[in-house]
Length: 110
Image (cartoon, rainbow, N blue to C red; front, side):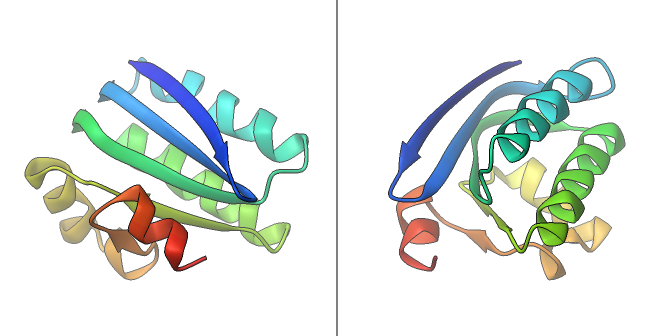
């Protein structure tokens, strides 16, 4: 898994490449927790290059969403591939976290 980030307006866009699973989710969560600790409260997760997400990856996304809620922050998802999008829909996460077709569209809704 590779994580890259950029700041756009007042939002951190985090792009994840590869797999978000039991092996990689601790690093993902650590990265986002660190950003939240630095005061960041608005995130767009760009999953356009994410090939796979496991239940451990879903837990990391949910834990981050809860941390942000405590800080009156928000998290948005963007560019989910078919398989990853299906996991979010089946798990019911798509009802909790807004999903957009692109990071730019998500940014326009903030």
